[in-house]
Image: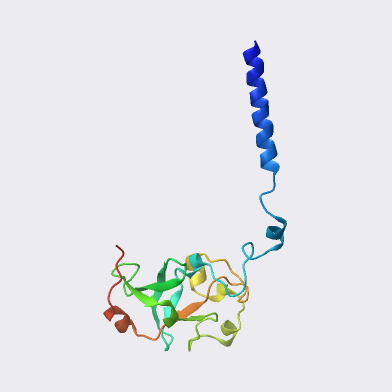
Length: 167
C-alpha cells in the first residue's frame, strides 16, 4: 500500500514540475522587443523562393532558371546553380555562376509584347511564373524574392560553360 502512495507522489511531482517548466518563459525581455529574427526585413530574400527564379540575358531572352544556391562555411552565397537548356527537365544541365555576376531585378521583364497595363501591375501574380510555382502573391514592396535575374550571356555561352556536378 505504501508503494502505491510513493508512486502517486512521484507521479504528481513529475507532472507539476513539467507544468511549471512548460510555463517558464524561454525568451528574455530584449528578445521580445527585437525584430531581427522574428520578422521579414526589406532587402532580404527567402532562399527557398530564389529556386526557380528565371534568368534572362541583356536582350530579355530567358536563358535558364536558378536551381540551387551554394554557400560557403560562413553562410555567404558563393555560387548560384543555373539550369540551362533542356525541355521539361530533360537534357537540362547545370552551370555554376558567381553570385556577384548576377543582377537581381524586382520589376517584371519588359518585352515588346507587354501591354502598358501589364507593366503597371503591382502584384507578382502578373508574372507567368506565379501560377507555375505557387509563390504567394505579394505587392512588389512586400516580395521575399526578386522577379528575375539578369546574367550577360547567351544560351550557347552557358551551354559551353563547364557543367556543375554534385559529388
